[in-house]
Length: 394
Image 1 (cartoon, one colour):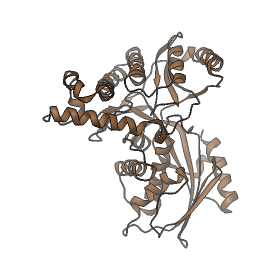
Image 2 (cartoon, one colour):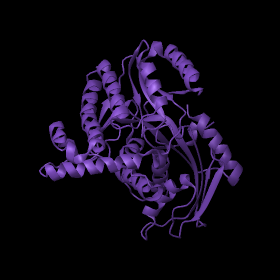
Image 3 (cartoon, helix red, strand yellow):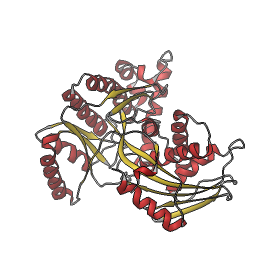
Image 4 (tube, helix red, strand yellow):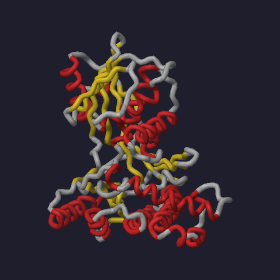
């Protein structure tokens, strides 16, 4: 099942380093069923790891201090000395890796050289968290190769901090957590405040999750992600100034929010309105999944899109077009933009026996309207990061 990703990565490693890798690791991307942009606002999210991966082929070099990493898909490589303090570099993909290494580069951790080739089936810029898979995959590798005794939770937090410090994106914890903690056929309801979590069976009863890639690529750094965070932080300050007895953002009520609207301003009000409603939707979605109420889950997805488009304002014409037209098709229960916004994918809950028909119709409409060929990803919910042994490789 994984050979189409593993074998080319393996062959690239052999060609570049004239040796066999000692380890193969797979680090998954993720989808978020519902709960967008609430992971930095004390909310709940409902993510799952998926069967799109970064594959790492790895070998330790005990006699060397140099780590060489080859990004097969980008045709780029980077070498650094593990004994010298690392700093951010021009290649953004490498900053995710160096940001992880910088946190573990302390006296009690003794590293040697490494050779690494990685390749991916996670589409970049589509909202499936290729960056979290890269960060947490590398942290997992270091943990395994050098016996660092990190917990899964620590690996997720290290990945998040790498994004903050070396990539400059103030992301929440959800993406990294899902990549590390994913379980096959389970969604994770994660409390982003305490990191407490529980699993729910993802039995969608004859429906599939399909991702429609708008092929409009975004970068959180330039897309307004940090700007939205500033809007939200301003709103939170005003709320806590007026209601200091409230401990967590998610415990503010809509009437409290309305009370502070004038002082807060329209922009921050809209952002906080979306977040408070979205946190409630996540709880309702977890209940719907656990009770097998897939129709209501679809309704909640569609409500989330409306909020992301009009209140949080992170959608775009292409994504609004995809969602609106998909919702008009037979057999579709719900659709919404997924990920940080300003491009990427929509996530769609579609009856399995109607999926091909919906894909054909929407692809044609999208091509006609925007002259862009939409991509489609059918995803399955998978396990989190793990090592694969040679028995998996042809």
